[in-house]
Structures are given as C-alpha cells and as structure tokens.
Length: 288
Image (cartoon, rainbow, N blue to C red):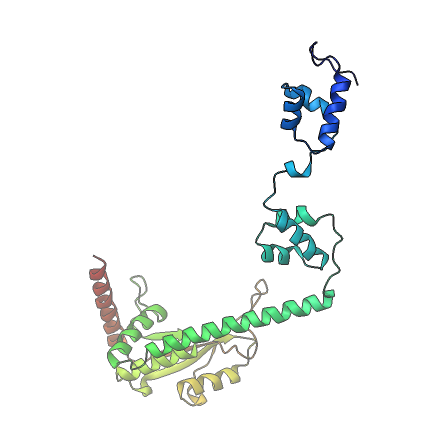
C-alpha cells in the first residue's frame, strides 16, 4: 500500500511501519509508540499500526462485562429472557444482545402443560381476588351493625325515590308502587313499610316477567322472599320477546321483578315526596 505523507523523517514509511508493528506486538500503546518513534501525527500513527489489535491491557473495562458473562451462563442453562432479566436487573434489550448467538433452550413445558399452568395461575388469582372481595364485604357488613329505625326510615325514603314510581305534572299518579328484581331490595322496602305501619292487607303483589320464563317458579320464589302465599299474586305482567335482542336474564336464577303496590296510598306518596324534599334540602345545605 502506498501512503502519501510529508517528506523528511516519515519518508521511509515501510521501515517506520515495521518498527511500529514490532512495538505494537510487544504490547506497546499508541502513546508509547508515538514517543518511541517521534511520530506526532495521529493519521500517520494510525496508518503505521493499522491491522494490529491493541494489547489487552489498554482496553477500558466494560462495567457490564460481568453481567454479560452471567447472562450467557444462565442462557446456556436454559433460562428464558424474562428470568435472566429479573435475575440480573438489566433490560431485555441487553439480554437479547448478549445471548442472541446462543441456541434457544428447549421449552420447559409442552403446550398442554403451559395451558394447565396458566389455568392454575388464573384460578389462584381469582381465588385471591374473591377472598379480598369477601374480606371487604364482611368489613362493610359489620359497619352497618346496630342500624337504627331512624336510619332505616331514611334509607327507605331514598330507596323508594330511586326505584318507586313518581307522579309527573303531565301524569298525576299519587300511588306508592315499587318495582325491583333484587330480593334484598324488596325485603328492605317491605321492612320500611312495616316501620311506617302500613298494614300488609293494603299490599298487592304482581310479578313482571318474560313470557318464556317459569311463572309458577317465580311466584314461589317471590312468595318466599316477601313472606306471603302464592295465592295473593295478581295476574302477572308478561314481557314479549323481541327477536332482535339477545336476552341474558335467563336460567334458573331469573325470577323477573316483583311489583309491590300499596292501596289507598295517595297520602303515603305525598309524605314520601315531602320526606325526600327534606333530605335534598339538607344535602344542599351541606354543599354550600
């Protein structure tokens, strides 16, 4: 290779290169070669040692060399990227760069075993979540211990105003009619009526249910919830099926809704209206 350089002491480039190569192979650094040969032009100096690797002692230590070696050992033991990443605390990109030339380990589990492990893990997770929910519910349930009649009264007013029928300016219906599908809500409402000393003889019951459901079973279910005989139910209101909709309220757990009407209830309805208005006034005062 012919190199163009300034005349003078660099004129015999090959002889100079031979000396530089000998020094390089003897373990000298570029600075030592420069001082020995008195070559202070970096371009010329690099040309003199071109192709000769630097001695090991001149290489700066890499802080990740130890991690890289450990990662390679773990990969050879069959560890996955995720396990190596978690074990060494380094990024997935680094792990991939360090071990990508190594053979991929054989899977520890078959596809069927992996599916079974996933199902087991999911079952444990759901069990833990169920336990957590049950613990929260039990704690909240205990917080309602010793509920007073005054508190039940307020709850009943709010419950009716949320779920009961209301009179409208364009359709005055001052009647207490309550409809719900939740057994607990129905029982709370009936307990509230008992608190108000509304006699059971004034109550009328009717089931609102889909036409394809088991009506007799629904009557038995709601009779047990309300503590009444099935003979007191009025004719049920049947909901027709819309073929364009997909029903989800099906199966043995579907009992429709129970409609509870109070006879001669205009005064009761207006009292509920007034009670609710008072609750709202109190809430508005707290917001100011």
